[in-house]
Image (cartoon, rainbow, N blue to C red; front, side, top):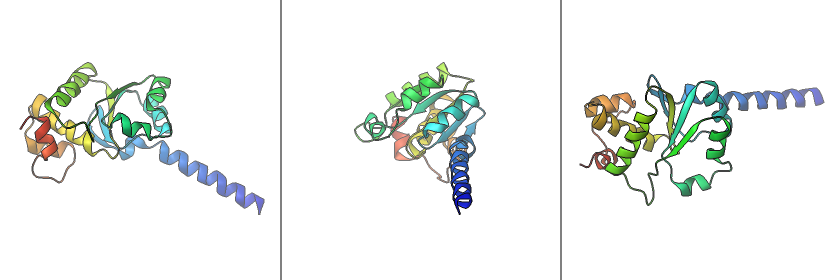
Length: 164
């Protein structure tokens, strides 16, 4: 009986380890060096470092980050990653200034692997799509295709980022 319990526990630990170490496979790869996904978990930061990710751009708010049971900044530092926060969400509207801040980070880390995230990946996707339109001269249709969206038009959030 104990042998089966131990085997079950080991299998559960293996499943958890597999799930936490597959972030990049589950995230949307939107460019050769850019992945967009949900909030990384602690084990994901080690995966990032092992896969030569250089920076993490977080589009959650400080308030949201305080609800986590870990310190994302400390984990990024521990693994030699740059952790950047561009707050979008409650009390932090989508604005052209946010898009300009994002563009500066994209230029700073050009050609380097990076992960963009928020809670679910939606805000990060909108920011990236707006950046493609404004700073990479993509059409709205091309930008939406790049983020693997089924939408046919830019969202109100993307339009706000673009100052429309």
